Amino acid sequence: MEISVKNQYQPNWESLDSRVIPEWFQNAKFGIFVHWGVYSVPSWRKLSDERFGSYAEWYYASVYGEYKNNNDDFHERIYGKDFKYREFAAKFTAELFNADFWAKTFKNAGAKYVVLTAKHHDGYCLWPTQNKHKKNWRVTDVGPNIDILGNLTDAVRKQGMKMGLYYSIIDWETNWSHRTESGYFIPEYDHQNYGIDEENYPDEILIPQLKELVQKYCPSLIFSDGGEWDLDENAAQTKEFLAWLYNEAPNKNEVVVNDRFCAGMPGKHGDYFSSEYHDVSDIVQDHVWEESRGIGGSYGFNRAENLENYSTSEQLIHELTSIVARGGNLLLNVGPTWDGRIPIIQQQRLKDIGDWLNVNGESIFETRPYHGISHAVNKFTTNGRSIYCIMDSWPNEKEIFTLSKGLDIDSIHILGMDLNLDYQIEDNKLLIKTPLIHPSKLPCQYSYVFKIKLNEV
Image 1 (cartoon, helix red, strand yellow):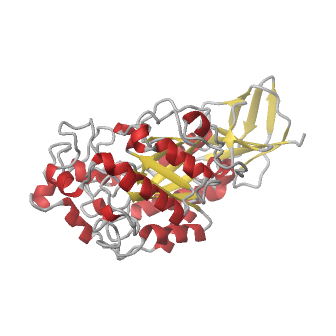
Image 2: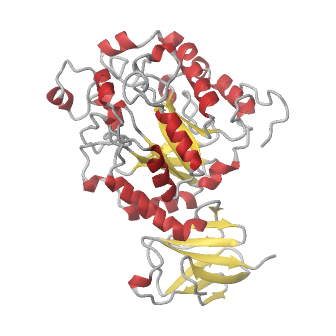
Image 3: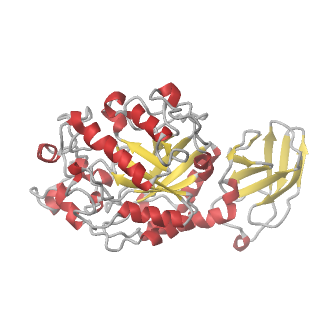
């Protein structure tokens, strides 16, 4: 969408909410999230059945800090009570980080976009920020001494995918929160020695860094987080920043943002709404949305997790198809190790998803939900003159679908098989006959798709 009038968008929600989201996001459907940083060195959080209770990227707060869960003594036992969280940065070596390998892996998984944690809540920056407050807390001062965000951005774009970034709106070392008794997630020593006056935070860190990231890397997506807990929209200067982004930024015609910049924003404002591990029970179906989650129970790599803590490929594919059939995107997270490896089990899950999408991708990408057919599986998408019925298992010999209106059908087949299927329509019922197939001849695993091709009007 070209902007023809200068300052078309004003710093108020009515104006900002009038923006039409760039179409690429709704067409993309599947992206890869990458949580990587200083927390990847200890890579630990004791497992918990509590929602969000196993997030290892919260190590600063939940293992080292006072926001402990399960009385976890891991930090003191392994590293000693005097070992400071910031000391982990020197061990964040990333010597095996290969941006091209990562990008190819994500491309082969079928992803259309990638989102990297440029800065998580601990405040450590994966790019050589010029911000004076991040001296010795940025990747080129302590750690790998390379521009991780820049390298991955180049590699991802080389593979033809969109590149986005995650930016924590708050820093635990500075920002107060109502969620803890002390008002801070981390020990007093850390926020007193490393934080700044919270009143100065938006002008000295938040807005300068957001604009720096936009101007230097031109991200296609900005995933904000943490601002929705306590940060007032006026203090965070959210509306002013978004007006600048939509009117003046070099990526203004492409960028999309989520709904976590400030308190009161989730589910109300933003190009798209975001949920994680299904923390939003009733997604607004008439607004663009995205579900994010890890392959296991954590975003950051968690050494406490075992095989049973990871979703199977079948479960992840079923989740992808369910989300897309409801109009959403899936942002599936990988958590690399401190030295830059993507754990093998995570690579395997991505490969299985990519193999499935190689056969069935047309039922996912550039589609929209279809509501003119009903069936027990209730997963239908459409694109032009094609309707896709996504089945969680190999269909029965006869599958019956209920139609809300007549369909002028040209042909029906299963994606990955060059065979037109017999079908019949009686009243409002569509009966599709499935051929008997030897398991070795199945076109894919885990889910199967009827493609109903309609005649041209």
